[in-house]
Length: 181
Image 1: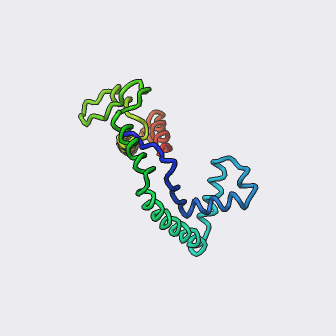
Image 2: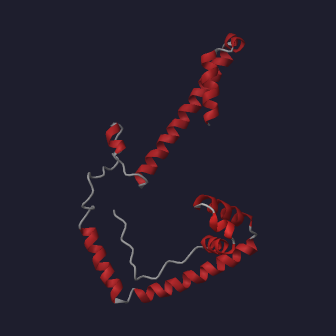
């Protein structure tokens, strides 16, 4: 399902406590404002984590007030003609289906055991199915690594000659797969 287009006439959603803190810190510090996006976020996140509960409470209270005022403004906005027009236009966009410029339809994951690789590659990125598929693949990979490590340690423990000779193949697998996590 496509995400609904943003309504430009609607009241803006309130900022979270962290975002309020971030906005204030960017305004206060020229050093932070001059940093790249990722560096700025890392610096401010570190500062946020170092704040005490009382200091964070100021921003949490402000965010709660902003949420309450947003709820009131949005309730008022729902009664306007602009909102009704936006709803009507949103329904027509959803009724038209996928974008006209979309070159190929997106296939859903089939839950059979015989998924072929082509079907797996056609999952849209960052959809729920994609994330679930990747999570399952990582679990399987982790299990295989654990199994391989167990087997290699069993081989080393069962045959003292391999331990003495420091058998290169077993040693290679053991050290490479234990370092992978």
